Image (tube, rainbow, N blue to C red; front, side, top):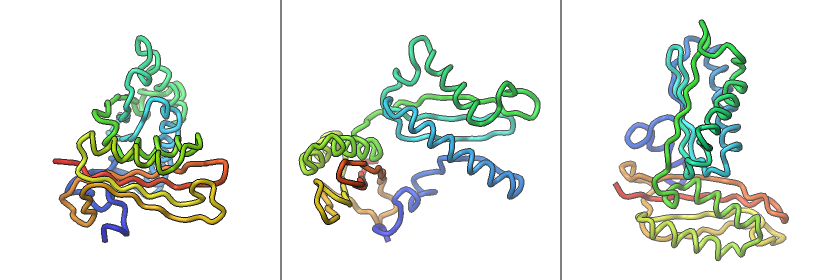
Length: 217
């Protein structure tokens, strides 16, 4: 079972919770909020990519929207004197279509929070991004993967698995390669396993990068 489902979705409840937390009154509101969350998450992940963003958590209260950004480089997101946060808030308000109505009657107030990622090497998404960027720069895939494996294990992980799929190394025929180190019991629900997947758009074609990291309690 652990090989067939998303490791994070498999552990929602015992180990993880949802990245979007809110209640919808009806189907129409539910559809609207799901689409809005997807657009917000996609736009923020792209905008804050240089800051090393790994997660966007959206929590909606009655008249308030709390957005928590988990980033590896908080200084880049906050900016000098908080200028980056102000710009980011305007960007989010515009995406939500609030205009100048934020905080007014019937419109929610938007709050942005920055949460630093304590150990970026133990974040599966950030590790996948690092490997994908190295593949785009034409670094040999085995060197990129082995460096990532060593970095994750040195940071204190119990185990790590990296899977590459596609035209690896510019090969004519696509293939899949899997690299492992340490212990990674994906079927054990009580194990804390982080997961991330990122596409690497190389000159030869698309290479998918998937990373599983087993963390200590």
